[in-house]
Image 1 (cartoon, rainbow, N blue to C red):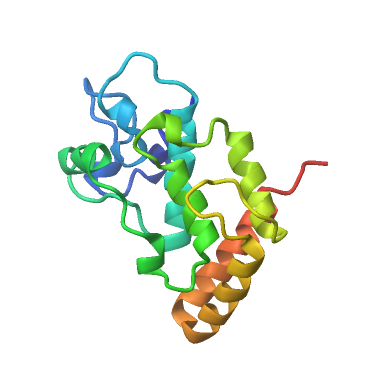
Image 2: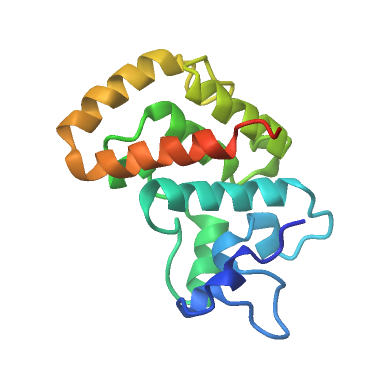
Length: 174
């Protein structure tokens, strides 16, 4: 289980560090069930943490920010801001995939990291994704995203970088 992705960023703000004697993990990357201290935390906590990484990669920031306690409260009670509000050039399908990984209810997240990786691959090759919120094919979304990226130069570089990173990250090993 991924328990502390943020420790690599020790120079960052207080919300990114594990507090001694407190919940185990970095609040900014904790799933709601982990933040509540539930017993049966499972692999879907890792899927949630991957969603935070993806959110940060796509938007340039963490979904929840503030003090340790503020971030925990937000993880439990607040939906993350739409990544498309931060980068209007981001394709709808990619936002949908990202937000599904960060669903508050673990039953609404991807069942496995493999399911997430498969949807990311579908996105990259312009096939329909299975993330549920949007049944729009990624082919149409890519066309829309491409025209939006042309109109939004600042977001364009982040969107194109994200697609490039996703392409490398989801390439089969070998």
